[in-house]
Length: 261
Image 1: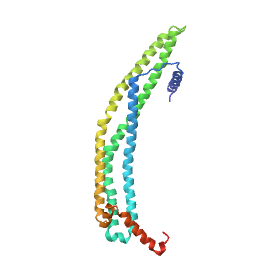
Image 2: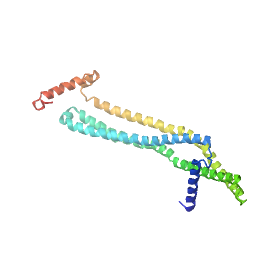
Image 3: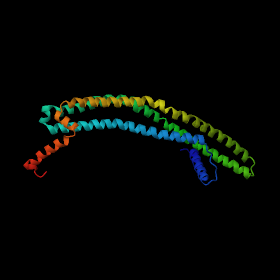
Image 4: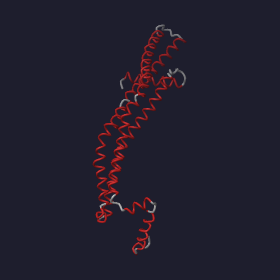
């Protein structure tokens, strides 16, 4: 920060303290404050959307990676028994293909149609926030010189040139503040309204990508189902699977080496 910038920052900090104590009147614009609240709400929602959209892709990768680890463990658990009917190998192949083909095929389109557009939208926030900060600075400068003019008017100084100079500075400060204030009050609503047509294509792409992933996953799991025991499927549908599990557990209990189970 330059020396000039440091002096301005110090002066503004002093003005803000005087505002808190009621010695300097603060300029308020209700229209701007309303639009600023709407903008902050949108900014927070868009930032969260960017985070969650990235998290969704990471979650898909984590899920398929977990499925692959489960499949490898189940295949090892079944051993030759699983190889005979093909169920464990079929499941392992299905989740491997889901990870290798579906997830990787969706990665590029998801980034292009969902992540990148949301990120570009959020990239405008720093510039908008810088403009809002600049408006605050101009508002503080205007309030400070306005208070100075009021003081010189109420209690004229011996130097009669001080009041005209202060009044001129007040006009310049007001013009600078009004320009930024009017620009933001006019353009913030436009930015907020543009969020819907901007996000619509990405939202549509998100739904289609989710649909494709679910359809691919269902299709691959359906292929595995043909290897499952028909009786197991029927018992599950009839709510009798617990009985079958208990029967197997009882057989384990009957083993002498597992008699304490």
